[in-house]
Image 1 (tube, rainbow over the protein chains, first blue to last red):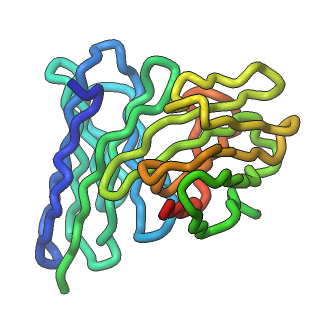
Image 2: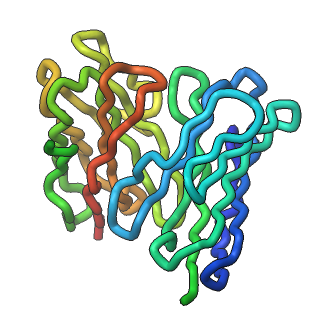
Length: 109
Length: 114
């Protein structure tokens, strides 16, 4: 079993839709949860970071963590074509950052 | 300010050749990380450096892979006797300190082994 599982998609939605991206993880000791965004042929960039259960909001983005279920989510409201990218969840655990496979998202105008 | 830079951006090599990939971290960042990203996959941790401490090489896939870092500056990742399965994007990241500090990534080196 992989330490972090993420549906690779691809996911294609119309502009303005609400997008939900999800990951599950196996180790309950994992503490810090991150979402990275990666545009084509670029390095990932940190989008959001949280370490507690519950929701954290930043503009159109909301990160949600449910430690009891070992489940994390990223919601994008009012999605824009510029949000088209690969989204990677990442969890700090076992002294390293463990990444999900990444979900490729396309927002259609 | 300048971000993390990597060179070359693309590298095509023949099976069995050695390659050297370079990473210039953000100035002042004590921690440096190397990752491998195969097509359509997430990032696979390879190695990290923290200051002058011995590097954590636990993620290196074989003894054909090695990495060095000069102080808190440039790092090189060397792959000897390249194989086709080494084809991937190699990403470098740096952070102020090792741990949960934000990692800033370079654009990567796309390696193709023919």
